[in-house]
Length: 157
Image (cartoon, rainbow, N blue to C red):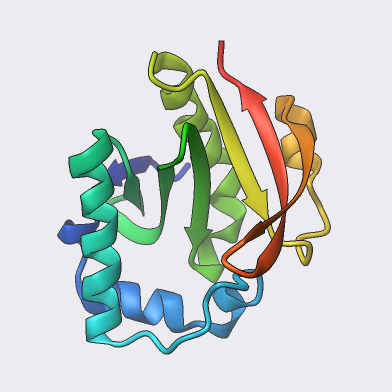
């Protein structure tokens, strides 16, 4: 049976699930900005900041569900004039990344507010072939909060 991928809002997820997800060292491996311990206060601050994006921009990060079970979070966050896409899955759901991203990119293509999507990947992510396959172009290296990222851009005509 194929996993059904759906999106929900982060406040609908038990904080303990988010805390366990974000505390897994396999998740932190490719997240250079993850320099703190996740506890209840960190989860509350994280969820509040993502909800603020929804309030401010009308769009933000979702909880990602597979067959109604939380498997990660991702979506779009406005960075200046750009919509940046991010996805952070639980290790057991890493294989769902392409399917989740296809669904999210289809959303972006259908949304007139999003003329293009950017992606920031840490240099530790050696395989960017999925971005090549969808037509994302390498923009260059950028500094974000003191860490270097590889920036890609996908037009969403």
